[in-house]
Image (cartoon, rainbow over all chains, first blue to last red; front, top):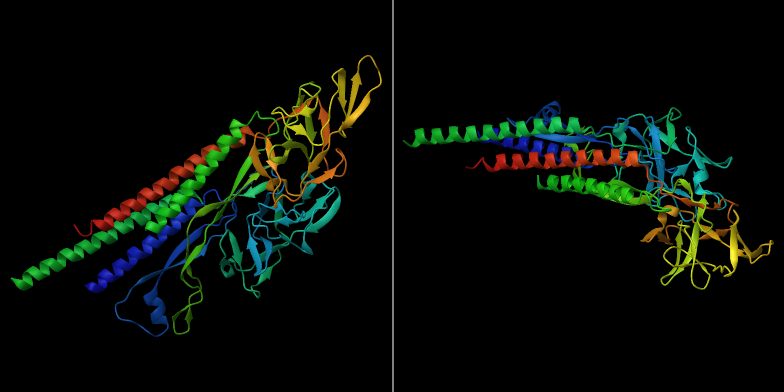
Length: 243
Length: 261
């Protein structure tokens, strides 16, 4: 009896976590390069039984989050340092802690003229950071679809685009960027196209999130109902036992 | 649950900021030299509830973890420095910069920069902006000037009295910055230098990446009305959806409360 309540309570906890994921996705409806999070639930009992350790009657629900790397829509902004990626690759940002991967291509120039992300970290080119010479105007910087950066006919470098074999190997590093272990398998990224003057919009589909939200609310209600039903049964039992 | 409320609230705050930015862009659609603002967002820190790679049971490694983000925050507001539309006013002291660059002006708070070239002369004959700040370096127009010609490189030639030969009274110098988006907006069509923008790069107008000066023109704003209105509608709907999420969470909390009645 108390076991059932514990199971239902864990379900309600899990639904609460799913609700948190939904609100987070909705909060990022306008964040460029954001990839929505998906909550999956696994039956922990099944996992434990497969490993040979079964705990009696414990069907606790556990959740895990994964990232949905579906392509977001490319929106034209007209800003010449806005880059949108069409494909499954990532831009690379160099940090002292290693490489970070991101789809958010809203870039700037540092005071020295180097291509940097919003936090001032250099964007990796195939031969190192990409710098615009001082005597060329910023508006002359062009990025070709294969990632080649040039200005007034001079090639300044080529953007490093990295694509992974399994997107599940990427770990969220915050600020719309991802980390990967050094031996994560990479695949050929030449199919990716870089579109200048475009931003990749968030891949959150509000309708999907709202439908999930409705499901979560109703399931939550149903779970609460089963707890109250349990409660009534216990009371009835107590009445019989003590009468 | 309550954490989710603050996440959704940051979402509404973000949409509010977009609306505020759009409102400012639209209000300045006719301001000379105005550059539209674009807001950029990032997600906030993550709370790791369960680590990926933890052992579920002996020998069973969880393939993914459980991390919940805490919301969205604005990363930066960017001024988009694309060329605004050039309006032919034919006024001899209206100047527009075609390309990169800013006029330098002297203000009581120091040197400032502007794209607003609607100039006039003050009582001493110096070239000043519409708010009265003198150009740096200062250029004085003699009081008997009947025609002023300003070249693309900034040379100011004055035709005085009945003479048909012009005399050079100075050159309007322009400066530009490695990262114009990093300039700080002071209001009054003025911007100032910051560590992010880099120090001003001097040069001759029309050469080496510096824009050219066009006399008789004014640069209008680069605000695109249609995109701003489309963004406004999107922001409004996103705001609404975030508020619905809060409402749904509220109903769930109420359900929980009713368990004990």
